[in-house]
Length: 392
Image 1: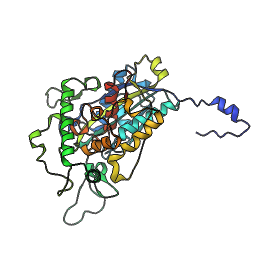
Image 2 (image 1 turned 90 degrees about the horizontal axis):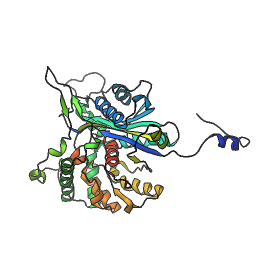
Image 3 (image 1 turned 45 degrees about the horizontal axis):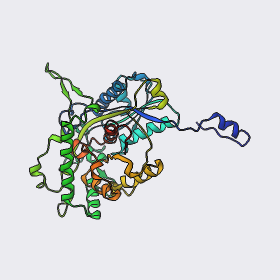
C-alpha cells in the first residue's frame, strides 16, 4: 500500500506516520539436533523437522502459537516437499492457519535472511511478534528426471542436492571448486584447512561435554515402528563421526591434483531445523518475555559467485560501520563453515582473533543442513553471549 503526499498535506501526513524504528529482541531461539545424512532424522521431512523447531520456540517463549503474526522460514531444496514449505511447518506445529508464512531460499544464508526479514518487519512497525528460522532434510531430497519422452537406452537422473543446493550455476561446477579457487588465490593450504577442521571437531566435542548446547536444543521424537518404542534424538551426530588418524589421508574431492578440499575439512550433508521468535521491545514487555538478545543491526553483501567464500569479509565491515561497533568489541563471531577455507579466509581478511571465532565448532563438525544453518548461528549466539556482550 502506498500513500502519496503532496506539498499541501506533507506536514499533516508526516504527523500521522511514525518514522521511529522499533527495537527488536530475541525472546526464544531453539533448534533440533542435527542428524547425519540418511541417519537418525532421515524419516522426517524438512517441514516436519521445521514443525518441531517451531513448537520448541513457542514453548521456550512461553506464548501461545496464535500470538505469532508472521513466519519466515529458510529452505533450499524444496523439490518434493509440496506447496509452501514454511506454511506446512507452521500448520504441522499447530499454529493457526491464519498465520502469514513465507519460505526463503538464499542457499546457506536462508535461515539468517529469514531472521533479518522478520526483524525488518518488526522494525517497520508491521507487527509485534514474528517467528523466523530454517529447515532442511538433505536425506530426503529427491532425484530429478526431465519431463518428456523416455529415450532409448534409459534415463539419466540428477541429484537434487547437488543440482539445487551445491552447484555454481554460472560456472557449472560444485561449490567445492569455488572453495578451491579461494584457497589458491589466498594461499590457504590443505594443512591450514585440516588443522581448522580438526579444531572444529574438538571444539564441538568439548562444547557437548560442557553442555554448551543444552539451552538451544529441542529433542526430536521418532515414532517407533511395529510396536517398538519411540526414539528420542537429543544430540548432534556429526561431531562423533571423525577419525583423526585418517584425517590427513583423505583424498581431495574437487581437484585431484594440487587440491586442498576433502570430505574431512568440508561440511557434511545433514538434516535439522531451527526457529527464533522475535518481538518488539514493547511486545516482550507485554508478554513478560525475557529477551535473550537484542538485534543491533544486519547487513548483506554479494560478490562474484565463485568468490562466495569471502562474502562475510564484505558484509561484516558494512555492519560494523552501520552500527558503530568496533571489531574489538565483538566477543563472539559465528561464520558458517560451509568449507574450512571459508572461515580461514575471512579470519585472515578481517584479522579476526581465532579464539573468538566459532568457539564451539561449526558446520564442519556439527553439520550443515543448508536452509537451517544461518538460523542456527543466530540461535547459538543468542544463548552463548553473556550479558553485555556483542556477537556477530
